[in-house]
Image 1 (cartoon, rainbow, N blue to C red):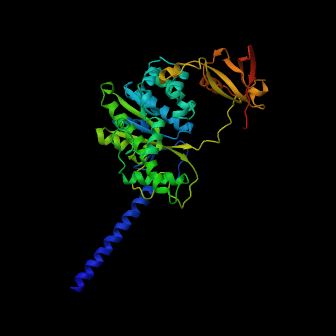
Image 2: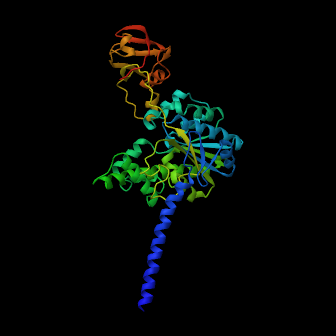
Image 3: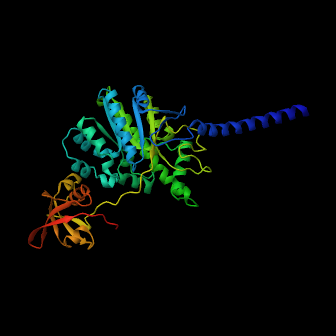
Length: 422
Protein backbone atom coordinates (compact mmCIF):
# COMPACT_ATOMS: atom_id res chain seq x y z
CA UNK A 1 0.00 0.00 0.00
CA UNK A 2 2.80 2.38 0.90
CA UNK A 3 4.54 1.70 -2.40
CA UNK A 4 1.34 2.45 -4.30
CA UNK A 5 0.97 5.76 -2.43
CA UNK A 6 4.57 6.69 -3.15
CA UNK A 7 4.07 5.82 -6.80
CA UNK A 8 0.92 7.99 -6.93
CA UNK A 9 2.79 10.94 -5.38
CA UNK A 10 5.68 10.46 -7.81
CA UNK A 11 3.28 10.52 -10.76
CA UNK A 12 1.71 13.76 -9.49
CA UNK A 13 5.17 15.35 -9.13
CA UNK A 14 6.17 14.28 -12.63
CA UNK A 15 2.91 15.60 -14.11
CA UNK A 16 3.25 18.88 -12.25
CA UNK A 17 6.82 19.28 -13.43
CA UNK A 18 5.74 18.40 -16.95
CA UNK A 19 3.00 21.08 -16.94
CA UNK A 20 5.52 23.64 -15.72
CA UNK A 21 7.89 22.67 -18.52
CA UNK A 22 5.15 22.94 -21.13
CA UNK A 23 4.29 26.46 -19.96
CA UNK A 24 7.94 27.51 -20.18
CA UNK A 25 8.30 25.85 -23.56
CA UNK A 26 5.32 27.79 -24.92
CA UNK A 27 6.90 31.06 -23.86
CA UNK A 28 10.41 30.17 -25.06
CA UNK A 29 9.38 28.64 -28.37
CA UNK A 30 7.22 31.59 -29.34
CA UNK A 31 10.20 33.89 -28.95
CA UNK A 32 12.61 31.42 -30.55
CA UNK A 33 10.40 31.18 -33.62
CA UNK A 34 10.55 34.93 -34.20
CA UNK A 35 13.75 36.12 -35.94
CA UNK A 36 16.43 37.21 -33.48
CA UNK A 37 17.59 39.87 -35.94
CA UNK A 38 15.06 42.07 -37.69
CA UNK A 39 15.50 45.18 -39.77
CA UNK A 40 13.23 48.03 -40.75
CA UNK A 41 11.20 46.91 -43.76
CA UNK A 42 11.12 43.22 -42.81
CA UNK A 43 7.82 41.39 -43.06
CA UNK A 44 7.64 38.31 -40.83
CA UNK A 45 5.23 35.40 -41.15
CA UNK A 46 4.78 34.88 -37.41
CA UNK A 47 3.75 31.21 -37.42
CA UNK A 48 6.99 30.15 -39.13
CA UNK A 49 9.31 33.05 -38.36
CA UNK A 50 10.05 33.40 -42.08
CA UNK A 51 10.90 36.80 -43.53
CA UNK A 52 8.98 37.37 -46.73
CA UNK A 53 8.58 39.97 -49.48
CA UNK A 54 5.43 42.06 -49.84
CA UNK A 55 4.58 40.11 -52.99
CA UNK A 56 4.54 36.93 -50.91
CA UNK A 57 2.41 38.59 -48.26
CA UNK A 58 -0.05 39.74 -50.90
CA UNK A 59 -0.44 36.18 -52.19
CA UNK A 60 -2.23 35.41 -48.92
CA UNK A 61 -4.82 38.13 -49.61
CA UNK A 62 -6.70 35.90 -52.03
CA UNK A 63 -7.84 33.52 -49.29
CA UNK A 64 -9.13 36.21 -46.94
CA UNK A 65 -12.51 37.92 -46.87
CA UNK A 66 -11.25 40.37 -44.26
CA UNK A 67 -7.78 41.84 -43.77
CA UNK A 68 -6.99 43.77 -40.61
CA UNK A 69 -4.03 46.16 -40.59
CA UNK A 70 -3.02 47.32 -37.13
CA UNK A 71 -1.52 50.79 -37.36
CA UNK A 72 0.64 52.94 -35.12
CA UNK A 73 -1.36 56.16 -35.35
CA UNK A 74 1.65 58.50 -35.28
CA UNK A 75 3.97 56.49 -37.53
CA UNK A 76 3.96 57.49 -41.21
CA UNK A 77 5.54 54.18 -42.29
CA UNK A 78 2.60 52.39 -40.71
CA UNK A 79 0.20 54.36 -42.90
CA UNK A 80 2.36 53.74 -45.96
CA UNK A 81 1.87 50.02 -45.30
CA UNK A 82 -1.89 50.57 -45.12
CA UNK A 83 -1.84 52.36 -48.47
CA UNK A 84 0.27 49.58 -50.02
CA UNK A 85 -2.13 46.90 -48.75
CA UNK A 86 -5.12 48.96 -49.90
CA UNK A 87 -3.84 49.27 -53.46
CA UNK A 88 -2.88 45.59 -53.72
CA UNK A 89 -6.07 44.25 -52.11
CA UNK A 90 -8.14 46.52 -54.35
CA UNK A 91 -6.38 45.14 -57.43
CA UNK A 92 -6.67 41.50 -56.33
CA UNK A 93 -10.36 41.87 -55.49
CA UNK A 94 -11.03 43.45 -58.90
CA UNK A 95 -12.29 46.57 -57.16
CA UNK A 96 -14.82 44.65 -55.06
CA UNK A 97 -13.53 46.13 -51.83
CA UNK A 98 -14.72 48.23 -48.90
CA UNK A 99 -12.60 49.81 -46.17
CA UNK A 100 -13.58 49.87 -42.49
CA UNK A 101 -11.99 52.71 -40.50
CA UNK A 102 -11.71 53.23 -36.75
CA UNK A 103 -10.94 56.90 -37.45
CA UNK A 104 -14.55 57.69 -38.33
CA UNK A 105 -17.56 57.34 -36.04
CA UNK A 106 -20.81 55.60 -36.92
CA UNK A 107 -22.99 58.78 -36.86
CA UNK A 108 -20.78 60.14 -39.65
CA UNK A 109 -21.45 57.35 -42.15
CA UNK A 110 -23.50 59.60 -44.43
CA UNK A 111 -20.61 62.07 -44.61
CA UNK A 112 -18.20 59.27 -45.54
CA UNK A 113 -20.59 58.19 -48.28
CA UNK A 114 -20.54 61.71 -49.67
CA UNK A 115 -16.74 61.65 -49.64
CA UNK A 116 -16.66 58.36 -51.53
CA UNK A 117 -19.04 59.80 -54.12
CA UNK A 118 -16.94 62.93 -54.55
CA UNK A 119 -19.70 65.21 -53.19
CA UNK A 120 -17.66 67.03 -50.53
CA UNK A 121 -14.19 68.51 -50.24
CA UNK A 122 -11.42 67.33 -47.94
CA UNK A 123 -11.98 70.42 -45.83
CA UNK A 124 -15.68 69.59 -45.42
CA UNK A 125 -14.87 65.95 -44.62
CA UNK A 126 -12.63 66.99 -41.75
CA UNK A 127 -15.04 69.61 -40.48
CA UNK A 128 -18.24 67.57 -40.69
CA UNK A 129 -16.69 64.50 -39.06
CA UNK A 130 -15.06 66.70 -36.40
CA UNK A 131 -11.73 65.03 -37.17
CA UNK A 132 -9.63 67.04 -34.73
CA UNK A 133 -11.84 66.20 -31.77
CA UNK A 134 -13.02 62.71 -32.69
CA UNK A 135 -9.65 61.40 -33.90
CA UNK A 136 -7.01 64.06 -33.45
CA UNK A 137 -4.12 62.48 -35.36
CA UNK A 138 -2.41 64.16 -38.30
CA UNK A 139 -4.68 63.89 -41.34
CA UNK A 140 -1.65 64.09 -43.63
CA UNK A 141 -0.88 60.50 -42.56
CA UNK A 142 -4.25 59.43 -44.01
CA UNK A 143 -4.52 61.79 -46.97
CA UNK A 144 -3.29 59.39 -49.68
CA UNK A 145 -5.50 56.62 -48.31
CA UNK A 146 -8.58 58.82 -48.32
CA UNK A 147 -7.76 60.18 -51.79
CA UNK A 148 -7.45 56.61 -53.16
CA UNK A 149 -10.79 55.72 -51.57
CA UNK A 150 -12.49 58.74 -53.17
CA UNK A 151 -10.77 58.41 -56.55
CA UNK A 152 -11.85 54.76 -56.83
CA UNK A 153 -15.25 55.20 -55.14
CA UNK A 154 -14.45 52.55 -52.52
CA UNK A 155 -17.12 52.32 -49.79
CA UNK A 156 -15.67 53.53 -46.49
CA UNK A 157 -17.31 52.18 -43.33
CA UNK A 158 -17.31 54.21 -40.10
CA UNK A 159 -16.70 51.74 -37.28
CA UNK A 160 -16.66 53.26 -33.82
CA UNK A 161 -18.75 55.19 -31.30
CA UNK A 162 -18.24 58.91 -30.75
CA UNK A 163 -15.75 60.23 -28.24
CA UNK A 164 -18.54 61.69 -26.11
CA UNK A 165 -20.32 58.34 -25.87
CA UNK A 166 -17.03 56.76 -24.79
CA UNK A 167 -16.73 59.37 -22.04
CA UNK A 168 -20.27 58.58 -20.91
CA UNK A 169 -19.45 54.87 -20.64
CA UNK A 170 -16.24 55.62 -18.75
CA UNK A 171 -18.20 57.77 -16.29
CA UNK A 172 -21.33 55.65 -15.82
CA UNK A 173 -20.29 52.14 -16.77
CA UNK A 174 -22.34 50.05 -19.17
CA UNK A 175 -24.89 48.97 -16.57
CA UNK A 176 -25.89 52.53 -15.72
CA UNK A 177 -26.43 53.70 -19.28
CA UNK A 178 -29.95 54.74 -20.21
CA UNK A 179 -32.07 52.22 -22.07
CA UNK A 180 -31.86 54.40 -25.15
CA UNK A 181 -28.04 54.40 -24.94
CA UNK A 182 -27.91 50.64 -24.40
CA UNK A 183 -30.03 50.03 -27.47
CA UNK A 184 -27.33 51.54 -29.67
CA UNK A 185 -24.79 48.96 -28.47
CA UNK A 186 -24.29 45.28 -29.29
CA UNK A 187 -23.69 42.80 -26.48
CA UNK A 188 -20.39 43.73 -24.82
CA UNK A 189 -18.08 40.82 -23.96
CA UNK A 190 -15.76 41.41 -20.98
CA UNK A 191 -14.94 37.75 -20.31
CA UNK A 192 -11.76 37.11 -22.32
CA UNK A 193 -9.00 36.32 -19.82
CA UNK A 194 -6.06 37.06 -22.12
CA UNK A 195 -7.66 40.23 -23.43
CA UNK A 196 -8.00 41.42 -19.85
CA UNK A 197 -4.34 40.57 -19.11
CA UNK A 198 -3.21 42.50 -22.16
CA UNK A 199 -5.17 45.62 -21.28
CA UNK A 200 -3.98 45.47 -17.67
CA UNK A 201 -0.44 45.64 -19.05
CA UNK A 202 -1.38 48.61 -21.24
CA UNK A 203 -2.82 50.55 -18.32
CA UNK A 204 0.17 49.81 -16.08
CA UNK A 205 2.58 50.84 -18.84
CA UNK A 206 0.94 54.29 -18.73
CA UNK A 207 1.85 54.65 -15.07
CA UNK A 208 -1.43 53.57 -13.50
CA UNK A 209 -1.28 51.17 -10.57
CA UNK A 210 -1.66 50.93 -6.82
CA UNK A 211 -4.77 50.65 -4.72
CA UNK A 212 -7.03 52.45 -7.18
CA UNK A 213 -5.99 50.21 -10.08
CA UNK A 214 -9.00 47.89 -9.86
CA UNK A 215 -11.72 50.55 -10.16
CA UNK A 216 -9.80 52.52 -12.77
CA UNK A 217 -9.12 49.41 -14.81
CA UNK A 218 -12.76 48.26 -14.88
CA UNK A 219 -13.88 51.57 -16.37
CA UNK A 220 -11.00 51.53 -18.83
CA UNK A 221 -11.73 47.89 -19.74
CA UNK A 222 -15.44 48.49 -20.33
CA UNK A 223 -14.68 51.29 -22.77
CA UNK A 224 -12.07 49.20 -24.61
CA UNK A 225 -14.43 46.24 -24.90
CA UNK A 226 -17.22 48.55 -26.06
CA UNK A 227 -15.00 50.00 -28.78
CA UNK A 228 -14.03 46.54 -29.99
CA UNK A 229 -17.53 45.04 -29.88
CA UNK A 230 -18.99 48.10 -31.60
CA UNK A 231 -16.34 48.00 -34.34
CA UNK A 232 -16.87 44.24 -34.70
CA UNK A 233 -20.61 44.86 -34.92
CA UNK A 234 -20.09 47.52 -37.61
CA UNK A 235 -17.96 45.08 -39.62
CA UNK A 236 -20.42 42.21 -39.17
CA UNK A 237 -23.42 44.33 -40.13
CA UNK A 238 -21.74 45.62 -43.25
CA UNK A 239 -20.59 42.19 -44.42
CA UNK A 240 -24.09 40.78 -43.97
CA UNK A 241 -25.71 43.67 -45.86
CA UNK A 242 -26.76 43.61 -49.53
CA UNK A 243 -24.18 46.34 -50.24
CA UNK A 244 -21.35 43.98 -49.27
CA UNK A 245 -22.34 41.15 -51.59
CA UNK A 246 -19.23 39.97 -53.42
CA UNK A 247 -17.02 42.48 -51.60
CA UNK A 248 -13.99 41.97 -49.43
CA UNK A 249 -13.20 44.21 -46.47
CA UNK A 250 -9.97 45.91 -45.43
CA UNK A 251 -9.96 47.23 -41.86
CA UNK A 252 -7.67 49.99 -40.56
CA UNK A 253 -7.51 50.17 -36.75
CA UNK A 254 -4.99 50.70 -33.99
CA UNK A 255 -2.71 47.70 -33.54
CA UNK A 256 -3.96 47.10 -30.01
CA UNK A 257 -7.42 46.25 -31.35
CA UNK A 258 -6.18 43.28 -33.38
CA UNK A 259 -3.07 42.01 -31.56
CA UNK A 260 -3.42 38.37 -30.45
CA UNK A 261 -6.69 38.31 -32.48
CA UNK A 262 -8.79 38.73 -29.30
CA UNK A 263 -9.95 42.32 -29.88
CA UNK A 264 -11.92 42.85 -33.06
CA UNK A 265 -10.99 39.75 -35.16
CA UNK A 266 -12.23 37.20 -32.63
CA UNK A 267 -15.47 39.08 -32.08
CA UNK A 268 -16.15 39.29 -35.81
CA UNK A 269 -15.20 35.68 -36.46
CA UNK A 270 -17.58 34.23 -33.90
CA UNK A 271 -20.39 36.10 -35.69
CA UNK A 272 -19.66 35.09 -39.28
CA UNK A 273 -16.73 32.60 -39.41
CA UNK A 274 -15.28 34.36 -42.45
CA UNK A 275 -11.58 33.78 -43.26
CA UNK A 276 -9.34 36.67 -42.27
CA UNK A 277 -5.74 37.61 -41.63
CA UNK A 278 -4.04 40.20 -39.43
CA UNK A 279 -1.02 42.40 -40.17
CA UNK A 280 0.61 44.21 -37.25
CA UNK A 281 3.00 47.15 -37.42
CA UNK A 282 5.98 46.84 -35.08
CA UNK A 283 8.26 49.79 -34.36
CA UNK A 284 11.85 48.53 -34.10
CA UNK A 285 13.46 49.51 -30.82
CA UNK A 286 16.17 48.50 -28.39
CA UNK A 287 14.74 45.92 -26.01
CA UNK A 288 15.49 45.24 -22.38
CA UNK A 289 16.29 41.48 -22.17
CA UNK A 290 14.69 41.33 -18.73
CA UNK A 291 11.33 42.48 -20.06
CA UNK A 292 8.79 40.72 -22.24
CA UNK A 293 9.05 41.32 -25.97
CA UNK A 294 6.34 43.87 -26.95
CA UNK A 295 4.84 41.32 -29.36
CA UNK A 296 5.14 38.28 -27.08
CA UNK A 297 3.77 38.75 -23.57
CA UNK A 298 4.92 35.90 -21.34
CA UNK A 299 1.49 35.32 -19.81
CA UNK A 300 -0.41 35.38 -23.13
CA UNK A 301 0.30 32.14 -25.05
CA UNK A 302 -1.07 33.40 -28.37
CA UNK A 303 0.50 34.52 -31.64
CA UNK A 304 0.33 38.33 -31.90
CA UNK A 305 -0.66 38.38 -35.60
CA UNK A 306 -0.42 36.47 -38.85
CA UNK A 307 2.18 38.90 -40.19
CA UNK A 308 4.33 41.64 -38.68
CA UNK A 309 5.81 44.55 -40.64
CA UNK A 310 8.86 46.17 -38.99
CA UNK A 311 9.01 49.96 -39.23
CA UNK A 312 11.34 52.63 -37.92
CA UNK A 313 10.57 54.56 -34.75
CA UNK A 314 9.62 58.04 -35.98
CA UNK A 315 11.99 60.91 -35.34
CA UNK A 316 10.91 63.60 -32.87
CA UNK A 317 8.04 65.58 -34.29
CA UNK A 318 9.09 68.63 -36.23
CA UNK A 319 7.79 71.98 -35.07
CA UNK A 320 4.75 73.10 -37.03
CA UNK A 321 4.12 76.63 -38.12
CA UNK A 322 1.42 78.50 -36.24
CA UNK A 323 -0.36 81.78 -36.75
CA UNK A 324 0.08 82.72 -33.10
CA UNK A 325 -3.45 83.81 -32.22
CA UNK A 326 -6.32 82.70 -30.03
CA UNK A 327 -9.50 82.90 -32.08
CA UNK A 328 -13.18 82.14 -31.65
CA UNK A 329 -16.36 82.02 -33.66
CA UNK A 330 -18.51 85.11 -33.41
CA UNK A 331 -22.00 84.24 -34.73
CA UNK A 332 -23.28 86.72 -37.24
CA UNK A 333 -26.64 86.60 -35.49
CA UNK A 334 -25.92 86.06 -31.79
CA UNK A 335 -29.64 86.09 -30.91
CA UNK A 336 -30.40 83.04 -33.05
CA UNK A 337 -29.76 79.79 -31.20
CA UNK A 338 -29.03 76.72 -33.26
CA UNK A 339 -30.73 73.73 -31.66
CA UNK A 340 -30.04 71.27 -34.44
CA UNK A 341 -26.46 69.97 -34.85
CA UNK A 342 -26.73 69.92 -38.63
CA UNK A 343 -27.83 73.55 -38.69
CA UNK A 344 -25.02 74.45 -36.29
CA UNK A 345 -22.52 72.96 -38.73
CA UNK A 346 -23.97 75.06 -41.54
CA UNK A 347 -24.02 78.32 -39.60
CA UNK A 348 -21.59 80.98 -40.77
CA UNK A 349 -19.55 82.99 -38.30
CA UNK A 350 -17.12 85.80 -38.12
CA UNK A 351 -13.77 84.75 -36.67
CA UNK A 352 -12.37 87.19 -34.14
CA UNK A 353 -8.87 87.28 -32.61
CA UNK A 354 -9.08 87.30 -28.84
CA UNK A 355 -5.32 87.63 -28.43
CA UNK A 356 -2.17 87.80 -30.56
CA UNK A 357 1.28 86.67 -29.41
CA UNK A 358 3.81 89.41 -30.14
CA UNK A 359 6.64 87.09 -31.27
CA UNK A 360 4.38 85.06 -33.58
CA UNK A 361 3.87 85.41 -37.35
CA UNK A 362 0.58 87.23 -36.68
CA UNK A 363 2.15 89.57 -34.12
CA UNK A 364 5.15 90.27 -36.34
CA UNK A 365 2.78 91.20 -39.17
CA UNK A 366 0.91 93.66 -36.96
CA UNK A 367 -2.36 91.78 -36.36
CA UNK A 368 -4.14 92.76 -33.14
CA UNK A 369 -6.65 91.42 -30.67
CA UNK A 370 -10.15 92.33 -31.86
CA UNK A 371 -9.31 91.96 -35.55
CA UNK A 372 -11.91 89.93 -37.46
CA UNK A 373 -10.57 87.59 -40.15
CA UNK A 374 -12.56 87.93 -43.37
CA UNK A 375 -10.43 85.90 -45.80
CA UNK A 376 -7.09 84.13 -46.17
CA UNK A 377 -5.45 84.02 -49.60
CA UNK A 378 -8.80 85.18 -51.05
CA UNK A 379 -10.70 82.26 -49.43
CA UNK A 380 -13.63 83.45 -47.32
CA UNK A 381 -13.34 82.58 -43.63
CA UNK A 382 -16.63 81.54 -42.00
CA UNK A 383 -15.45 79.63 -38.90
CA UNK A 384 -12.43 78.85 -36.75
CA UNK A 385 -11.93 75.56 -38.58
CA UNK A 386 -11.36 77.45 -41.85
CA UNK A 387 -8.40 79.26 -40.27
CA UNK A 388 -6.95 76.07 -38.77
CA UNK A 389 -7.25 74.18 -42.05
CA UNK A 390 -5.67 77.00 -44.04
CA UNK A 391 -2.69 77.35 -41.67
CA UNK A 392 -2.06 73.60 -41.84
CA UNK A 393 -1.34 73.90 -45.53
CA UNK A 394 1.55 76.28 -44.80
CA UNK A 395 5.21 75.65 -44.02
CA UNK A 396 8.01 77.87 -42.77
CA UNK A 397 8.73 80.63 -45.29
CA UNK A 398 5.24 80.65 -46.83
CA UNK A 399 3.18 83.82 -46.76
CA UNK A 400 -0.55 84.31 -46.36
CA UNK A 401 -2.61 87.31 -47.44
CA UNK A 402 -5.13 87.92 -44.66
CA UNK A 403 -8.02 90.36 -45.04
CA UNK A 404 -9.26 91.68 -41.70
CA UNK A 405 -11.86 94.04 -40.31
CA UNK A 406 -10.44 96.36 -37.64
CA UNK A 407 -13.23 98.46 -36.23
CA UNK A 408 -14.98 99.74 -39.35
CA UNK A 409 -11.92 99.53 -41.58
CA UNK A 410 -11.04 96.65 -43.88
CA UNK A 411 -7.35 96.04 -44.49
CA UNK A 412 -5.04 93.37 -45.89
CA UNK A 413 -1.99 92.07 -44.05
CA UNK A 414 0.73 89.75 -45.42
CA UNK A 415 1.81 87.20 -42.81
CA UNK A 416 5.03 85.21 -43.24
CA UNK A 417 5.14 81.90 -41.36
CA UNK A 418 8.11 80.68 -39.37
CA UNK A 419 8.67 77.84 -36.93
CA UNK A 420 7.92 78.63 -33.34
CA UNK A 421 9.39 76.94 -30.26
CA UNK A 422 6.29 77.74 -28.21
